[in-house]
Each structure stands twice: as structure tokens, then as C-alpha cells.
Amino acid sequence: MACRTRSYAEAGAELGLTHGAVSRQIALLEIQLGQRLFVRTGRRMTPTPAARVFAAEVSLSFDRIIAAAEACGYPPARSVVRVNAPTTFAMRWLIPRLERFHAEQSDVEVAVTTATTLRDELRGGFDVAIRRGVAEQSMWPQYRALHFLDETDTLIISPALYEQAPLRQPADIAGHVLLGSETRPGDWADQPQRPGSYRERSS
Image (tube, rainbow, N blue to C red):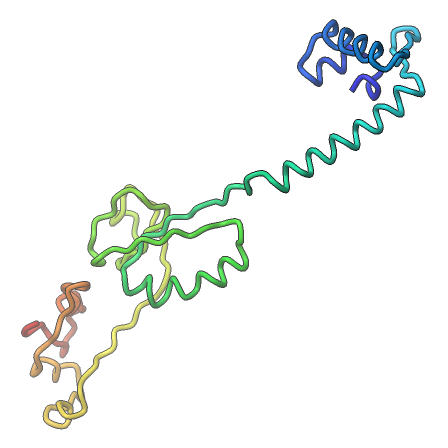
């Protein structure tokens, strides 16, 4: 520092030391090396040729120490994004896409936790929560709600049952037993009621 700045005071400021502390250390080093390292030229301390050579060699040593510390030290901490999502959605949509995400964002780790139902209350412990609903701030007042994906409901019926009681229009669903899922309760009841549409009969 002193060789580069040509000032004990400026070198001390960069190192967090006093002018006197830098002066004493250089004096001790001159005793060890057996020769002067600096001579005063006006208000500046001019390094001798020996001081410049010594500073260059020491600088290379410091560079190697820094490189060794970076190579052998702890790797830089990765950012962690905690995502809470419904179990089926996490398994079939989110997790299969994480490999591609990590390839593009290698410094970000995604920690996934799952919710047993889509109607689980939003509690702490996550950065992003995925839920089924309308992305209106009034529905999630304490969070920022964003539309993510569109969802389409599809009717599934066995071929044999379809032969017995075919579905040709929405009203025909009323003649069937409607099966519900524990992870998505109320799916049938949540369907919009339009003229000619159906209502839940059983689950």
C-alpha cells in the first residue's frame, strides 16, 4: 500500500491503521531486510528500487492467497425460493420443470412443499404459494395475487356407462352419480349454473 500510494497516511487509511503504525511496521521491515525501503521526497515517501521489487513479489503472494481462499473456501450461498403448491400440481407440473429452471438459474434453489388440498389456508413459510382461485386482491388481501395458469375441466366416463346413459348435452350429467375428490372438494358445486346446465346430485 505504501509503495503504491507513496504515503504512510494514505496507506494507513486503506488498511484501517494510523500513520504511526504503518511507519513502525516499515521500520521493522527495513531492519529485517537490512536496507532502506523509502526515502522522503518533499511530502511524499518515495520507494527505493528494493522496495518496488519487494512489493511486486509480495503482491503476487497475496494474489495466490486470495485464489487459494476462493478455491478452498465455502461456495457462495445460493438463493432459496420456497414454493408451496398442491401435491398433484407439484408432482406433475412443477417438479418436472425444475431441471430446466436450474439449468438457466443455477444460483437459485427451489424448495417445494405441498398442500393437501387447494383450500388450505395460506400460512407463512413460503415465498410463492400456488392456489386455485381468482387472482383478485380481495381474495388474498395480505398477499400479491397474480394469474398464473388457465384451467380446463374435463368430464371422464367409462365407455360402458356411456353406452347405457350417453352424455350429449350438459343437462344429461344430472342423470349420473358425480364423483368428487378429497383434494378438490366442491368442484361440482363450484361449476357456474347456466340455463340448461346441471347441479350436483351426489358425490
